[in-house]
Length: 333
Ligand code: NAP
Ligand code: ZN
Image (tube, rainbow, N blue to C red; front, side, top):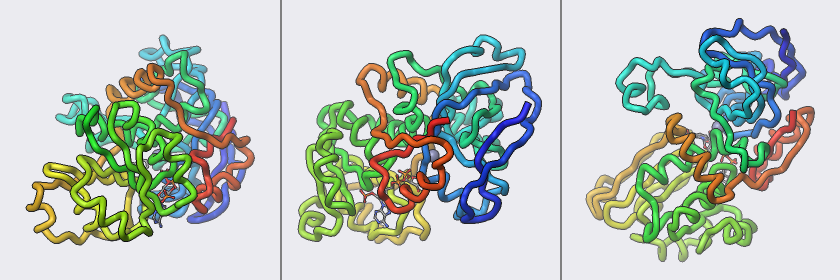
């Protein structure tokens, strides 16, 4: 058994064809024939070793939809099923986090493409407890990005009880951000898109945003003070964060899901006023992923994608790097 994949040999290198022998199938493992895999910005952080955790050769890819081709003794019921795989590869299933249904917060969790080979490949072996059956109504290619980007924004929207009457701002209308706009508006919230790309205004409204604010428009940012219950930041760059904290209404929350390079500097007075909170989000639990897939099926939600053959992976990565993807590149295996 060999897997044909695309790998970076060193930090920042273009991906090249790479063949490897997977580890034997364990009791809970399954082998998935990859059909589609999205390119998440986290794949670029891994290629570049921005987080200092990458092991090379690196096969990125953690927004996978495919079909289970083989399974260990405890997972045979999945054989032949269409499943999705996201960022998380395994958890200990024994710690407090796991036992309370927060496996995404398990201190012993592993990630699909950190120290393991990911989904830019024709196959992958993974713990079947992190392979999720895809409802029949969902299109495979448009669903792949939900497995990481989608759950990462869906989870805080649910954690902060977003619904009718909520005012939500989504900062950064990229892969994660465009799915956040879709989910929040389907939940009934009033959604504002905050973007550094004025040309995304029309798309943002089509995605379900009620308002669009260009982050270069100082007057519009000032007018947005004390406006939102939740500001969900999906950007991976350093911005002037106090401005966005100042946009929160009483008891409002700024939730980071995008990883930013520099530490946060905030005047505590901004938190005392309006009793605001600043927090983060880490993907979502298996239960939340199943719930999100059902929600997506019920509301007809999928990512807006640019489909490309797997062999065009480097072109896809460059589109994401240049902020040109509209809105998620999905590779076809
Ligand atoms: P993406 O598709 O590249 O989108 C990011 C968006 O952020 C861009 O489209 C752009 O939106 C905005 N942006 C980018 N650079 C900017 C800059 N210099 N200044 C202002 N805005 C900028 O990336 P993604 O796949 O959505 O991922 C976003 C971040 O989330 C990454 O850091 C990724 O690693 C992280 N992530 C975290 C988790 C988690 O569990 N917490 C899971 C998945 C991904 P506009 O053009 O609208 O400004
Ligand atoms: Zn991701």
